[in-house]
Length: 293
Image 1 (spheres, rainbow, N blue to C red):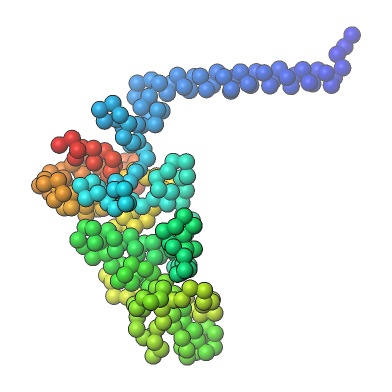
Image 2 (image 1 turned 120 degrees about the horizontal axis):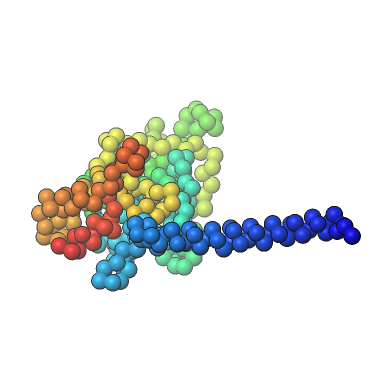
């Protein structure tokens, strides 16, 4: 007696399911797991965990912050680049803010910005870059001034109101990223006194005008010191950013700057495959090398 075709088809499907479950669900993972434990691969497969005195202190593949309990940089350590996720591997993500993110959302002055819910404020990418550049400049003893940034570390952006909507005579100008009672970075714009920004006011009918200012085109604070990586977990900084921090770290540890510069060179990784990207310094490994001195 012939087996009905529909039963044969179902039996073939069950056999295929069992075969591929064993092959891809059991055999393949076991083979890959076994290969990952071979010498030279085991460390990377286990997360590239770095240990000191038998205790894990981090991963050479994931960045971390070197700050105190209040979030302030510890002077004797090299600082990592900013992170949009706080270096949380479970929340790796970019900020998704781009070049057009230049206007902040001002917070409610009646609310506590340090409370759990905050005051509703939100910084644009421009202000984040300006604030970070000022902070790094203050920490390292160099100018953190950048184009389109105010001296107090926010985006130098106006909302300008014209008689004709988008053109005509200027009737009003507001420094939208400087909340009152701040003094506007620019006292007058085209003959009109510049106002500070006020929470709750609608400035949407004004034209956004970024003001370049007189900062030099190139800042001593490099780009990776003020911007996060796409994953927000980058464990490396540029050689330029490491060299900028060398004097501070050497002073905090009582070491010659030349010794610190030499350690930077020893912990600088070359270009990927010899030609992609730029040389970079692993911050965790560099700081551990300093601690071992």
